[in-house]
Every structure is written in structure tokens, then in C-alpha cells.
Image (tube, rainbow over all chains, first blue to last red; front, side, top):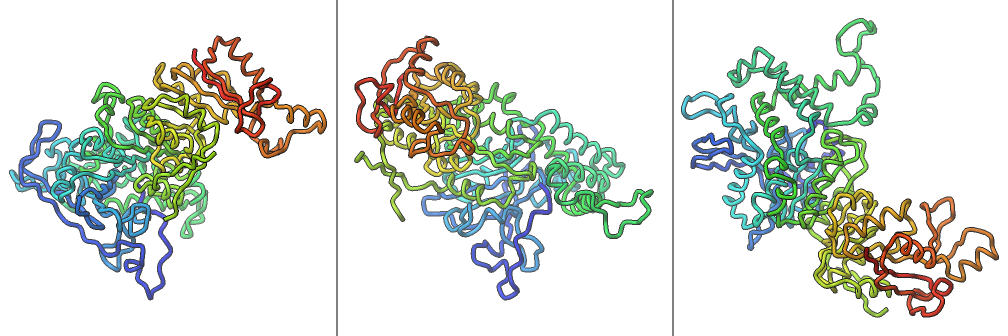
Length: 399
Length: 201
């Protein structure tokens, strides 16, 4: 997902935004340490793992009001609120989550964890291998979406959750949400998957591979063995610049940048210094990404996304969805060319063919794949309606 | 909280009478889901709706109904034969660009098909056309020609003729008078305002 969400207008100085009503306010991450050996789908084992997570709201007495938020490739556990009053930005889905918002923290106990294999505090390739005392690097077990789901299920149980009221995710997060419904059918009451797919197209795999090659061809990658602050910074930045283009759309880039020139651009057109605003913007995207993301995690997580294939794993989409007990809602976005509406539609149709309660809604946007992060009253109303539902209508039988 | 009340209509009641309890029902052009909700509440059906409009789908989701946003022909083509016990196409068929394809596909994926439509052969429509010589505007036909969706005004005689030529069996029919409430027993093509058909193939 991109780093440049449209920010809500700053609150007047008198009310700091983190204290404003309707916001979750200041939040702090916590660590869930699973102390026992964890066997990955690949068969590889680690002696234990940590998931960094945040929660907002309160688990109710029946322990069934939890909503799990699943992040995308480059996301993390910080999906709402601020870590400190001086934070430049709130959590990545702050527009959706908070008291009275579409995912109402006054009603729901919201959980979000950094995925296994990630680099924002959860165990991943940049974690220390207890056997060697050095980072795992490429000796970290191959991670699958199923491993991410299983580890987050353990977190939910650790938090005392009896069943999930809902699982919500966009992009890779949507894959996790779907897999929760498949692998934990009795635990998962509702699944809301947005801008996602049951398996990537060749084009999406191709983009991920270019990103991986940019990293692995950077000499500083050194077969995954690099110091904490070093590594393939050039390769990772290029991977991010390219991926960023796939998260937006021709129309949204044109609206945001067009062919506008940078203020500092040299009048001389015959140089390779950034001249267009879009070039400077992408460079900024790449640079800010390398300061917060680990290159090996990028390799591992894109691999997990590429290998996610419900049809192949279960024989068919219908067979994959056969155990599902959750009510499901799939949302596609018209301008998403990475996980296009058609792939989202196919998920809902397969769920319906499997006899499940499934809905499909499509929002007309021009923001591309990242549309699921959109500030849209229509999307908010849909999410709220799915999680909360109206009271039953009564019919007036007097004709 | 205000209580949400939905008015039951006569055509809803007839459609409901033709639905077997506990069956799998598909509503093409489901709107905000009033009919499906009624069928869920009175017949405990497993309901799915299809509509083109996002707000309609959102309304269905709010009331806990499964609903799919998209083209109904594409939707039907994604299902195997006799997947649904009954398909319902109510207040929709005269707005379709290709009604024959929808009806035949609905009869393929459904064991039975309910079609409900406004009878354009109703005498007031004939008189109106004869006297005014203009597109009809009244409480049924609410739009001007330039603001309406493609409309396929269909009459009871047209529809029964279509069923005959396509080998579609009419299991039941119900004709309502111009008020869409009381039954119309004589010369329905002239005196019925609304027609309902229970079809099979």
C-alpha cells in the first residue's frame, strides 16, 4: 500500500488530533510471544515467534466482539490511532477504525498484528536466529499466508477471543481474511475481503518478481546476509517505486502529478536529474520505504502472495470454500488493475456456488488497487452495515 | 431506534405462495432486498439477490442478505444447471436489454422461474397511446423517454406467445387488475395491470 494516504485536515491546536472525539487516540503496540516450536507449512520449524500487535476497544464478556484487521504487503500492526502526539500520521486505516467509525471501537475489540515474516516487530528474516545469534536472513523458513493465519489465530486465542465477529483485509489482507474463513470456519463469523484475489495473475507475479530481482541483483543484498542498517537499499527502493505504480492508476497519477515539473527542475531538459514531480515523488516513496522495511521480508512476503492459490491448494475454489461458515463480503474497485474486479467477483461467485452466504459489491473509483484505503462514505456504510446489520424489518401484512 | 417496516404487496404475497419453504432462491434485480427479506422471514429461504446498483447491494448487506453487484446474465452464466430452486424476476423483465437470454438462462440455473411484469396491453395504456400519441406518463410509467432505461413494453399476449414458441411451460399464472391488488379474471391482456408467471422448462 502507498505511504501517502489523504490525511484528514489537521485539528485546531486547541484539540490535539489524537484526543479528538471519534479517534482511538494514543495507542501502544504489544508483543505476543509464542514460546513453543512453530512448524511452517514448508515443514521448517522455528523455536517460537513474536507477533507485534495493537488492540483498540474492549473484548466483551462473551468474548465474541473481536474484529481482526489484516494488513497488506507493506502494512503493519499500527492500523489506527497515534503512537505519540507528535506523529506525522495516524495508523494506516485510521479513517475506517475508531469510536463511531465504520469499524466502531466502541462496539468491537479490534486486533491488528504485523504478519509472521514481517519486519515491524514480528518474527521474520531480520530477527535473530537463536541458533546462530545472527539474523535469519534467507535461512528463515518460507512463509505462506496459511502460516500468517495460523500464527494470528494463536494470538487471538492468547487474547481470549472465543470467536471472531469479523476478519477484514485488503489486498494480501484479503487473502488472510479468506483463509481464516477456510481454515478456522467455526472461529470466523464474518469475512470482508477487499481488492484481493484467490490467486494472482501472471502480471501480478511478474511485478513481484521484478521487485525481488531489484533487491537480489543489488550487491549489497549479499544473499540475504547484510547488517541491520545496511542491505540492498537501492534495490529495495526500486522495488518499492515500481510496486507503488501498481497500487495506483493512470488516472490518479495524472490527476496528482500530470506532467508538472519540479520547482527545482533545471531548465535544461537534457539531464537525468528528476524533472517531473512524479519522479521526485517515486524517489521519495522509495527512500521512505527503505527506512522502515526489510528487504528480505519483502522477498518473503511477496513470495507468500505469489504462492497463495486457493484453486491449486484445494482442488477448486468451490472446494476451498466448502468448509466456510462465515458470512462473506467481497469488495472490488473498478480501477484496481493489480487485483481487478473480475478476480474479486470470482471469489464471491465461487462462494455462492459452494452454497455460502456471500455478497459482492463494487465501488467505482479511479485510485487503483489502493482504493480500499479510500475515504468514502459509501465504503464506510457498507463495512458498518456488514459488521452491524440493521434490526430485522417487520412486514406490514395488511395489504 | 425506529422500527423498520416494509409494506407487503399483493405480488409479493403471490410470489411467496409459489416459493417452497427452505429452498434456494435467486432474485434478479433484487433492489434493496424487500422481497428477499420477506421470503427469508416467511419461507426461510436461502436468498441471493443480484442488482447493478451499489446502494441497493449495500442495503441488502445491511439487512443480512447475500447480494451480488453486477450483470445478471454474467451472474447466471457462472452457475451450473438447477443450482437454484427458484429464480425470481419481478418488476425487471421489461427493463432488460436481452430478456430472452435472461429468461432462458434463469430457466437453466433454476428449477422454476417466477416472472412478474407490468402488462403494457392494459386498456388504459392502449387508450392513452391512441388518444395522446405520446409516451405514457403516469404512476407506473414515471419517466420521460429521454431519461428512462431501455424499456421493453411487454403485454400478456406477447409473453404467453414467447413462452409457447420457446417451449417454456407455464405452471401457474396470476393476473392482477389495474390496481395491482384484486385478481383479474376476464380478458387479462386488456384488463390486467400486472401479470405473474410461474415457469419451468
